[in-house]
Length: 220
Image 1 (cartoon, helix red, strand yellow):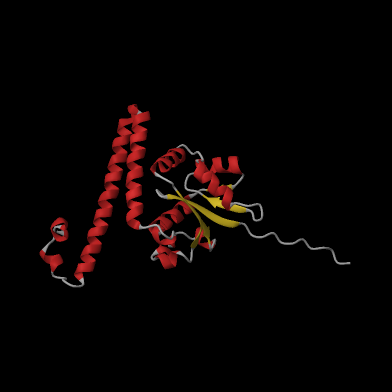
Image 2: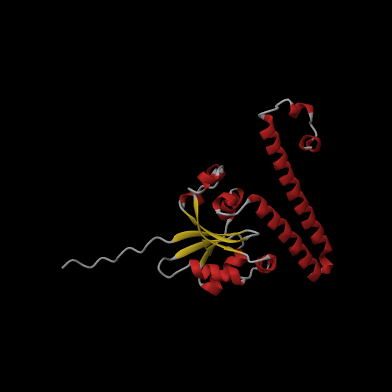
């Protein structure tokens, strides 16, 4: 009689927890080799179509309102699990396949492992993957518009700043630093819009870019 061979256990799936101002998303990493070679990973995220070949959306839990988004943001800053995130993870993770979850914050990963028993990974390679996902997040999450996400990010940033200032009046300097960072983000967004406008109108009137060098005058 031949000895019974054990059935091979299915390989663990690599999932990615990605936080946005609109809600929580869980992606599946389609090619685990990409996580080991991240130096040129951005090349695989140049377009939404290319990005969809690297990661695939498994589930998305949208916040019901700005209050829920604020509560989630506060919990994440403290390395805690909020109710929407807990519900999402319980829905995604099952006992059928041993899955691993990539998270941005190691502290949050430790909490998830402790509370839900999910093995979490957090390192520089994971952070690079997160940056690449962020660059194409509107194309990876159906129904999520760039303008809508920008407005939500801005509103959530202001709400978090007010919350921290309310409960940490002795840390006004931290609020100033965060305000400066937020201003830098807005400046980058405006520059991106201006560059797109110059590119679009450049097809029809390329001489206009040389005539009007000031961005504000060009947009008007």
